[in-house]
Image (cartoon, rainbow, N blue to C red; front, side, top):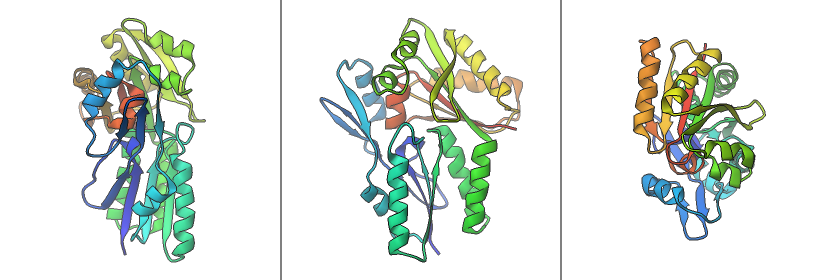
Length: 278
C-alpha cells in the first residue's frame, strides 16, 4: 500500500524524508513577474525585490488538476493546506479528493485545513508521519491529527511590514500602517475563525522577542517543540531560539526559512513561530 503526504507550498517544505511526499506550489504574481513557489524559486531574491516593489501583487492557489497529479498513484493520501480563509487551496484539494476517490473507490484522501501556515503546518505533517511510521490505520491517523491540531499546536508571527497582507485584504490598512512605522513589529496569532490577529505592537526586536515568549507561555507553551521560520532574518530567529532555551533548556527549537508564499505575506524580516502547547 502506497501512502503519501501532500502539502501546498505554504508549509515551507520542499521534501520530507521517510515517506512519499510532494509540495504543490502556489504562485506569487506582480505586474512584472510570476514567482512559482517550487524548488527553482530564489526566495531571498524574491523577498528583496518585493520589499521595494510599489505595484499590485497577489497570489494564486493550486488548481484541482495540480492536486490530482500529486495524489496520483497513492492508495492513501494525507493532505495539509494553508488556512482556507487566506487561499482557495483547501477548496481545490477537497474537490480533487472527491474526484480522486470517485474515480478510485478503493482509495482514501484526507484533507486538513490547517487554519494556519508555515511552521504549524510542518508540525501537523510530522504528526501524520508519526502515524504512518507506526503503521496506524488511515482513520486513526486522521482522528489523531485532527485532535493534535485542535489541542496541541499553535502559530505566532512577528512582522515588520504588513503591506502585502493589507493589499490583499488579509488585515485592515490601519493595522498594517502601524507595523510600517519605524521600528514597530506586530506580534500576533491566527484566530479560531482563521483571521490574522495582531496581539501586540512592539518597538524593536528585543521587545518583540520578549513578547513572543510571553504570549507562547500564555498559550500553554511549556518547553515543547518549536519551529521558527524566518524571511531573511536569521539574527532575530536565532535570538528567539536563545530566549526560549534560556527559560526552557530542554526545548527542541529549530530554525528554517520561509518559502515563496510565506515570504510574500511575512515579508522581509518576518518570523513565523509554530509550537506545541501543553
